[in-house]
Amino acid sequence: MKTKTSSVFLIFLLLIGSLAGCSGEEEVKKDRMKVGVMLSDVGLGDQSFSDAAFAGLVKARDELGIFFDYRELQTSGTYEKGLTELVEAGNDIVVGLGFMVVEDLEKVAKKYPKQKFILIDSVSEMENITSITFKEEQGSFLAGAIAGMVSKTNKVGFIGGADVPLIRKFKSGFEQGAKAVNPNAEIKVVYANDFGNADLGAGIAADMIADGADVLYAAAGLTGVGVLQEAQQEKKYAIGVDSDQYFFAEKAVVTSMLKNIDVALYETIKEFANEEKLASGPIELGMTENGVGLAPIRVIKLSEEQNGKLQDLEAKLSNNEISIRVE
Image (cartoon, rainbow, N blue to C red; front, side, top):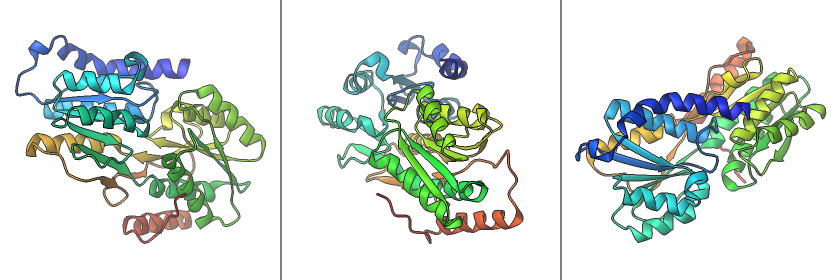
């Protein structure tokens, strides 16, 4: 697939420095911090979740001098096997990325009670696992507000990668944000049940557009990239997710809901490097903590009134003055 191939090439450029330093573990200083990460199901090239986490590791390598390793489901076969390999490789911290890794991560954490783990996007009560989650509903509320403001048909669409609690946080925020600025907005919702199929995303987007939707928001990994590109093809608007996805459809992507996984991972590694310990208990990052937000607004120009409304919503979310109902 062209989309994934181009992304993998970009990741390859990031990897050059990493692989040069990973030619042999004997070259790694004994006191150099080591971090291993088990990527989410699609792995590198998803152009959102895994790629964002990888960017955080690259930054930690360049700025903190860490050594890192990673596993993908496509090569390890199971999350449990990949996580076990990372533990046995001697990593100081092992990261499990995504809600789908929880069960296997907890199995491995029980076998290695002295190992330190980080779980991103879900919560575990195990003592040796530090859980990091995000208030995706807050960032998605802003995405919905943008959609409600710019829609000319009063019909907008949400495409989720799966009908699970995490993705419903995106949906709930998007729906309520759109309604907050446009009570007449109609939100169409489809779950793709696949995070790695750009063609499927494009097909869902085409159906939504045919039914009148003129702004689309997807929380669906690589499937969502297909949504963005179909919106561009049909001269409609789209909103990216997780990272700034403007460059995948520069005539369509108005903004992106930023989920700062790279920042969270980098800061957690930095704290461990300085303190030699991980925070106890779950960590939840929202607008207040710079865990979520919006990328720059492009393609369109908001009116002075719309900008004022958006800034007001951002301030209220940061101050936890807006309550978002999550299914």
